[in-house]
Length: 461
Ligand SMILES: Cc1cc2nc3c(=O)[nH]c(=O)nc-3n(C[C@H](O)[C@H](O)[C@H](O)COP(=O)(O)O)c2cc1C
Image (tube, rainbow, N blue to C red; front, side, top):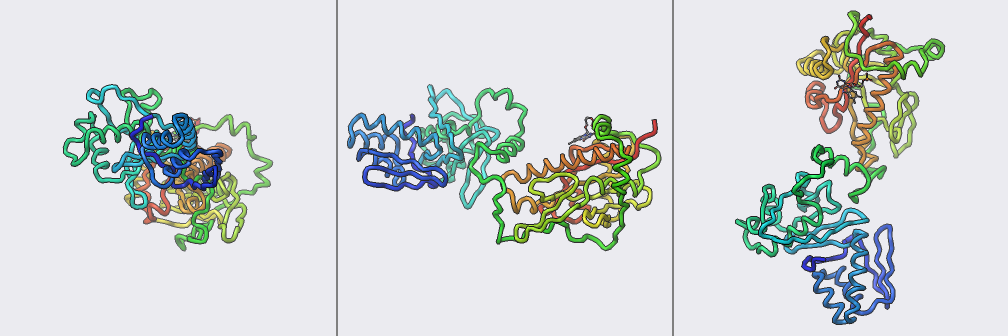
């Protein structure tokens, strides 16, 4: 163990001293340390109230309890470190706070400080949280609070390889020894890049690894799941988006009883489904669009949970039955309806006009055409958006990940129904959310496009 780090009990841990024992408590775990000798008790009190370096604490234990006290202290400390209850600081620069149980804090051994160079990992990032500058990385199990502007300056310099000597050049009042302690803290918390990147890591982009690690459970301690953090603070959004226009087109509703008798079999739909990028001469009809939307995406039932918000049942599933996705058919060629951008009202089964044809709408449909490499412009581009706050109101950490899963669920439902209707469907991987915002005037942060799906008639064989 590197005895120069200052160690302390994490803020979230309560220490309750009793006559011969100490109780340590987090919000979900309690540890009782019994028959403690005075030196150990005193060292634990230091951990909570007046942090000291490991070597000072060991010395305190040895002076009070004798030499055998040191091994006991080291053993307890290792256990508490593994629980993620111990913070490591290099004063006055930084404190590493564990973000997870099963915490690994590996004290680095540097053979030759003059030869070795150090660089910040490409996954490390700085951000401001509650007035503090925090260094985080999806590779790390800790977050590091930078306590002094010089720590931020050192991090900036570490964008280029540095030895402990070059690192301190130009930064006032930082000794090389302090810089080495700071580098050790960064190494122990996986904030620095290793010379050769793990072969599995090479292909990861920064934002993908951050999104993956922070939207899954594991290497962070952020609340995750349905936490309802805005309950009683912000009203949840209604399940049906308020009307966008009074120019409304009623859509055709298929007769489900008839379909039950005439539909192709489920196995045939599954086995014949393909992405189709060649389209027929005759465009799709407004009746076909009505049938597709009715079968794939209408609201079947609204469930009112009062102050917990409104939910709904639809033909496709959705986490928490929240159904934050909205459908905007961009009509290019469709028999029975003018080219324009519309919004689908899933309760009334109607289209409402959002925007007449515009430069932005032209850009959206052209981009989609380039994305699927077809020779012809799409007959219909179905743009899927998310009303983000419907999900964010309930869920934390995994809300955006769940939205993207929902897009996949809706894509597949559209694929299957289109196939059953003998239409030509094709999912699209990337669309332009900023152009969509411009085309509709909808605030990017309130509701953005998260998926696109091309639909047309099949080319006759
Ligand atoms: C999420 C998703 C994104 C896709 N993105 C595109 C795309 O941008 N362009 C395209 O031509 N096809 C796209 N596709 C269709 C796939 O290329 C297609 O599903 C794949 O090649 C398998 O062929 P199949 O669908 O005919 O079975 C996408 C499909 C999905 C599910």
